[in-house]
Length: 270
Image (cartoon, rainbow, N blue to C red; front, side, top):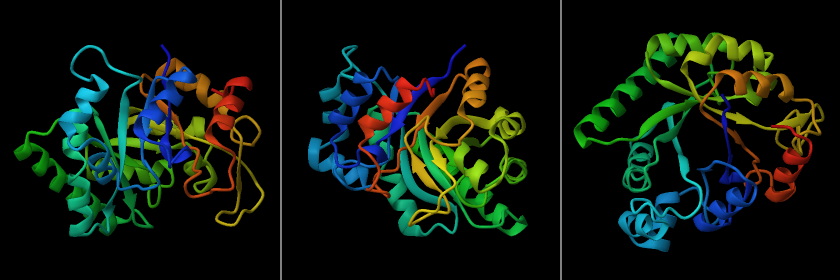
C-alpha cells in the first residue's frame, strides 16, 4: 500500500490549469489539488474565462474520452467555512459544482472556521454540513466535501468532537497545523483521527518567526517537520492523497514551486 502524491496550486498560483497538470506530470505526481489559477482563488470564474463551459473543459482535457491529458484534479479548494459562513460564500462554493462534475473531481475542500470548537461552534459546523447534504441530494451532485483542519480543529481532540457532531464527514488533515498550532506529534494525531482522513496537507518549516507566522516555511526536507515517520505511517496505512501545500500565493518570498518539488524528491522527503 502507498498513498498518492499531489501538490496544491497555491505553489504556482499564476499558472493555467494545463500548466499545473504538466508540472505534476513532470515530477511524477499522481494528481493536482486546485486552489488558485491565473492569480485568483475564484477558480470557477477563471475556468469560465479560459474554457467557456465545464463541458468544453472536459473535452479539452479528454476526461470522458479515455484520452485524459495529464494527471487528474483530485480536489478543488473552496473558501467556504463551516463556522461563520455567509450566503455569498455558500453561493460561491456552489459555483464549483459544475466544474467538479465535469472533471470527475470527488472532493471540495471546505475550511472549518471558528476558534474554539466548543458546543456552539460545532453545532454551527454541523448545520452547515447538513445544508450541504441537502443541496447535494436535490442537485444529485457527486462531489463530496472534506473539512480542512485549519482554525478551530487544531488538534485531535477538537477533530474528534467535530466528527461526533457531524458523523461521517471527511477530513482534510493539515498535518503542519496540528503540529505547529496544536503542538501534537503528527504520528500521534494520525493514530487518533485516521479513520476520517481522506486527504493530507504537508509542508516543512523551522522555528524562526516570519512576517506572517511564528515559524518560517522552508524547502521540503530542510526543516523541522517530522516527515520521515509520518510518511512511513501513511504509506503503510493510507490510500488517499498526500499533497504538498507550498503556499507561494500567500508567501511570495518562497522559492518557485519546482524548486520545492525538486527538494522533496532529492531529499526523499516523501
